Amino acid sequence: MAGMNDRGQLIILFALIVSGIIVTLSVIYTQNILAGMESSRIIMVFPKEEIRNLRDIVEEDFIDSMGLKKDEFDEYTYNVSRDIRILYAQKGSYGDIAVFGSYPSALTSTVSYFNVRITYIGGGIEYNDTTLCRPEGCI
Image 1: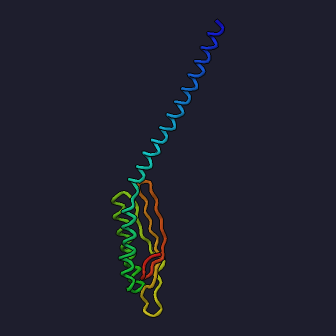
Image 2 (image 1 turned 135 degrees about the vertical axis):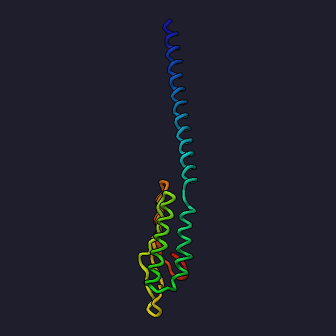
Image 3 (image 1 turned 90 degrees about the vertical axis):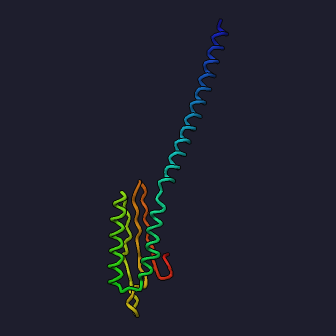
C-alpha cells in the first residue's frame, strides 16, 4: 500500500511539472503575439509621409526662396509655418517648420543659409529634427 502512495505522489509531481512547463510556454507565446501586434500597429501608424512632406517643403520651397531679402524670406517662412500649423491642427496633429536663423550674404543681402527645426507630433509619435540649409541642400 505504501508503494501505491509513492507512485501517486510521483504522478502528481510530474503532472505539476508538465503543467508548469505548458503554462510558461503559453505565457511566452502570448507575449510574442502581443509584441508582434504592437510593433505592426506602430509601423502602420508611423507618419512618415507627413514628415516627408514637411522636409520637402523645407528642401524645395524654402531653398528656392533663398534669393529673397532677409525680411521677405522671414515673412515668407513665417506665413508658410503658420499655414502648416493650421493644416496639421485640422488633421488632429501638430506640424511645424520653424526657421530660427536666416543669415544674409554680405554682398547681395539675400539669405545665404538658414537653420530650420521640423516638428511633428501626432498619434503618439513625436519627431524633431534641426538642420542647416544652404542653396546646395539641407544637412
